[in-house]
Length: 212
Image (cartoon, rainbow, N blue to C red; front, side, top):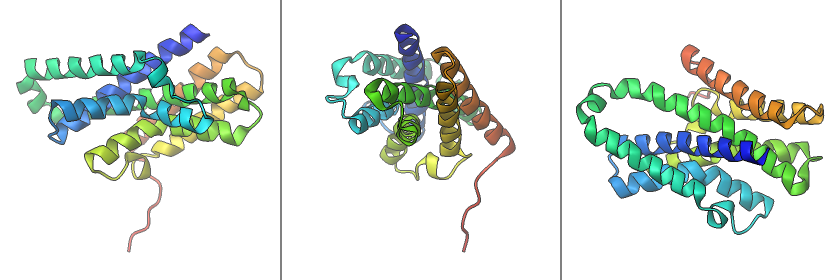
């Protein structure tokens, strides 16, 4: 199971790094700035999780694998950008759809990773903590990304982003409490989150908002 978790974290790190670095490039940050944003998007949720659970120093300092994976992902995006620069400019609007998919994948995976981390830390009986930690692990990287690029965090305004994370966390909690195999939680939780995110994007689902 540890190997499966590790693989999922690597996939999630790649997905969030692509999301972060691409949005940073769109905001006209330089290579260094965009790389910082990309890496923090990938590891920010895990950093927040570890601080909440009291796991210090956080995992990213104990095992820099995910930082390295995120960094190499950012470098790969830059190489693709410079090699296909004209195509990037031509199809940038369509690129937003790709970014959204990567963001949904990262969100789903890291909610599951956060829940597992809280359970492994001995908080399996605290459902509220599990859901909270899972949600913040999923949305934490995106929050850091949006703050760094100077926009209202995506989680606060678009396509039931946090709601999808919470629902996915509740699905994970249900499967855990029912005693289903861990792999079931790792499949169902991200699947539910990704499905909700894609449907919300397609049908433009948003929560009601206050307008004066």
